[in-house]
Length: 84
Image (cartoon, rainbow, N blue to C red):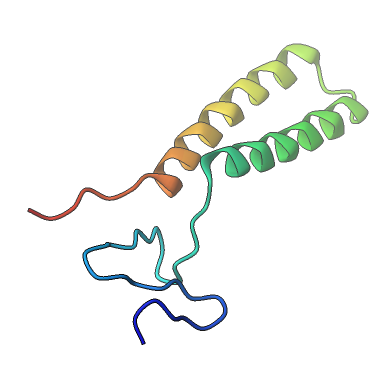
């Protein structure tokens, strides 16, 4: 039946393309990915502080990890261009 779907599946209507970012159909939001990565970085910064790591190295590592996190989030959540 058109418009009906099982739990966890999306109904595919005629003339409507369903965008999927991975094979499972799960869409990962950039914001959720970035917040999760920021929490991980925050934990690593706190661990480095507890280990008495010099503050300038903590800052350098945090900046590098934020850059890696942004690049990783963009490549994970970007939508592929449709084939012409």
